Length: 109
Image (tube, rainbow, N blue to C red; front, side):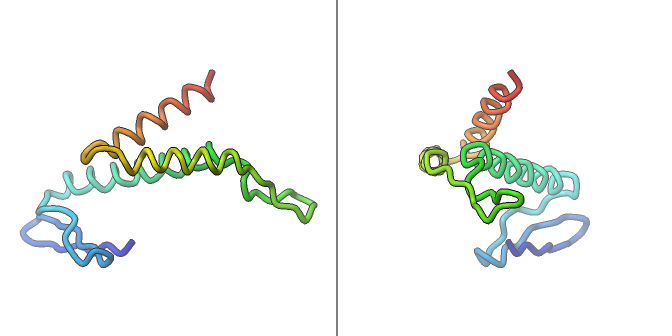
């Protein structure tokens, strides 16, 4: 991800070098940080969900020349991704949060 800041009169915008466009309107520092932290939180949850489904897929075994495989978990993760990509506009983050919450509840029981 290539993000750049545009700064003007104590307001900020994020420019994406990937989409070659602005990702945000002009925001205060506080509001921009809130959006960035929400984005980072969602990234963390997405990676955690991936790990949950795929584990121990592609993990190496200490002391052995072996890589573990979890094709069933890999397929379950791909199925979840398909559902995620079909989530209605504006519901992406809620979809990720719901799945992360479900997983954490399951693991903490």
